[in-house]
Image (cartoon, rainbow, N blue to C red; front, side, top):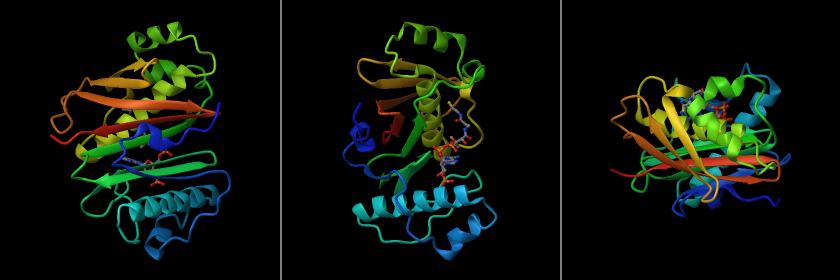
Amino acid sequence: MSLIPLASILPPEVSVWELTDGTEPDPLYPEEELLVACAVPKRRREFASSRTCARRALARIGIGSFPILSASSRAPIWPSGVVGSITHCDSYTAAAVCSDNQFRSIGIDAEVNHPLPDGTADLIASPGERAPLKELLDPAICWDRLLFSAKESIFKAWSPLSTGWLDFLQAEVTLDPLRLTFSAKLLIDSPATGEFLEGRFQVSRNRILTAVTIQLK
Ligand SMILES: CC(C)(COP(=O)(O)OP(=O)(O)OC[C@H]1O[C@@H](n2cnc3c(N)ncnc32)[C@H](O)[C@@H]1OP(=O)(O)O)[C@@H](O)C(=O)NCCC(=O)NCCS
């Protein structure tokens, strides 16, 4: 399988930057350094890579460089008028951003294409979501991990527009393996996002990528 870019599962208005395999991140701003001052080196590097991706993605839509801090929810704090999302997984990091005139929110997630640890699928998916996975025969794709990633993307898109918490079992996800899309029905009241969210996925080499964009009202 060839490596498919994240941009292929996002609308063209969304600016994406990806870092792979050992690319050295740019230095952090002092304010950003404070957020990871006590973190282990792996987390510091991951955080620096995410800020590098975010700044380069923002530059592509004409927004200059400045610190990208984190909210108490851990969501990145984007410049005014921007929505976006960040993911990291192994040696891969990505950021996706666009103007809030184009989308209300973005969620992206990357996972390694390995089966979830034993017992985890039962915690993140209902029997009704798990049953169709047995029919999906492509052995190259870990469908349980894909479902997990779809839910992480949903959470990252949902969270900045909402208060409170969205549990894994509060979104019922249906994968469409022919269209490489998924849809989610939220099982909680979510006036800010509406009841249904849509996303796209790709699996390339050993990586699963999922993305959700929430349309303007
Ligand atoms: C927030 C969460 C989705 C992040 O997942 P993760 O495994 O750490 O995955 P990633 O590495 O892909 O993403 C990390 C990035 O997510 C972003 N993020 C963290 N919390 C966030 C939130 N509340 N909203 C939006 N983005 C968030 C951050 O940018 C973070 O990177 P950074 O700390 O370097 O800035 C996960 O930790 C979590 O809490 N999941 C439980 C909630 C959930 O997924 N529910 C399912 C609903 S169907």
